[in-house]
Length: 53
Length: 270
Image (cartoon, rainbow over all chains, first blue to last red; front, side, top):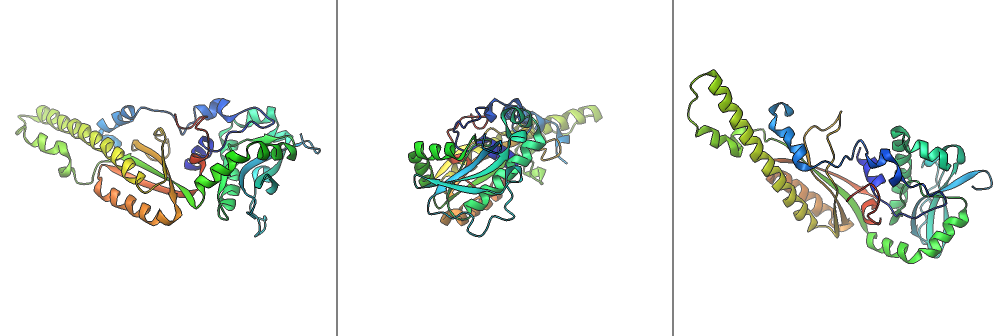
């Protein structure tokens, strides 16, 4: 989801009175929507014609 | 905690000449269902909200930040307030979940970091963020693909097995060439659009959604574009879409300048 990824990735980082940072949260670090994937890995999918309808 | 056992959620910072809620704050919503308000200090205005300890205290936060639904709802509420403020002038978004025990913490932050906030505001003034993504696609006309001609040169196959193998080789060649084309297009598109922007930022491509777009993402970029150049920028996206047939482009915006006010830390771009 575009909005979630953008909001999580951005903004000024200032340590407030609660020091838990979203960067420490596993879900955010390995976000279902922002997996760091190599481009060539994604492109392997293109070898299978069935990827395209 | 505040006197009533809550916390102060910080959305963002704008200039002190801003009246972000001059049109009223009803209907704006806010994190935790609490209407936003402002705190002014050091010629800056912080937009904040009051949230309860039960859902936003440290223990609760640790739990809730692992809940994708809670995260999505909270990010949306955070964003909605920033969007309203951004309509009236530049606003520097705070990272999600920046919390203070009292207004004094917010005031102190404005005073300590006044120069940084003012610098950030000047960078984004009269500018907005726009997102551009590119997905690798196969053009509708396979005869236009680079691999097609190579396949034709093989000559007729001698039987169904050989015919299958020949077709498969042609498909793989076409795939490899289409892949190369898409990657080259992604690089070109990124650079071309950068000419219309004040700042550009590259994010890692995202893995395909289970329910959404299946085509591989080859570009995930954010641009800070002057408001008076947005028309040109959008026209450039349209033009590049036509010229680069191996990628499909999507444009989103305007966004508050999430990608151009942070420190580059955190879970986002590497």
